[in-house]
Length: 270
Image (cartoon, rainbow, N blue to C red; front, top):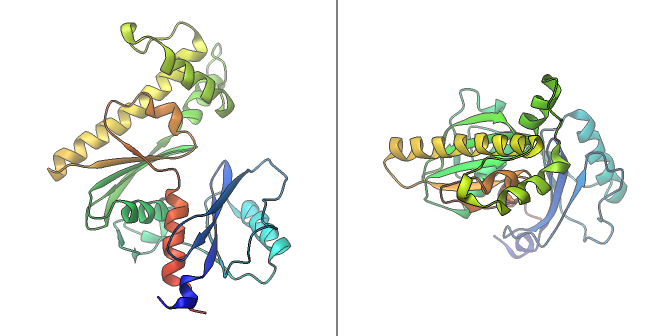
């Protein structure tokens, strides 16, 4: 890497179903500045104070409307900034894509695997990301992504119960931190069982999420006959990790870290 490239910075944007997360990265992959915006938030990110990056690298799974908003935000600060919206491919940054049609894999999952493999090289990984959906990715130590699982996330499970039953309340994401904290405070003598309907829904959905992860982790260890590091990430992780009974490592910047690797590898020298 030449001296000019080592000084390069990149704007990274991770647009999920609930929020837009961003970071400014250096060519060495560090993320000295970062922030987030809710999709319902009309404010602009605090970019005016940032130094001009040499390009923007974007993962967007939230659709064309959010893509247009990201472009407008970038144009308002750096109208000529080159930008690249990433797509999954057959091989990139040490990850080999095991999907039958590699390009159909979500860009967030792809970037997250790249970030996880870089953070924990030469280790078999199960990556659990808890957001609107819960996704699991199995990655061998050599970087081969062998496949994944997708399930409704905590908030989708809880909301579906309220919307499709006559007498159950609708829980949404803002209620999750309070309910998760309450579950963590409860004495373990009677197990996870709750004494009101809202907390019963919260605990049931959290246990369903945890059981999925634990089963996948156990099956993967048996199939590979090797230790597997469970890496957890995502905005809804707090609701689930309190219910997990297996060891895990938390990493809340997997997608941004993966985007930083892609940017550093593929951006042209200046």
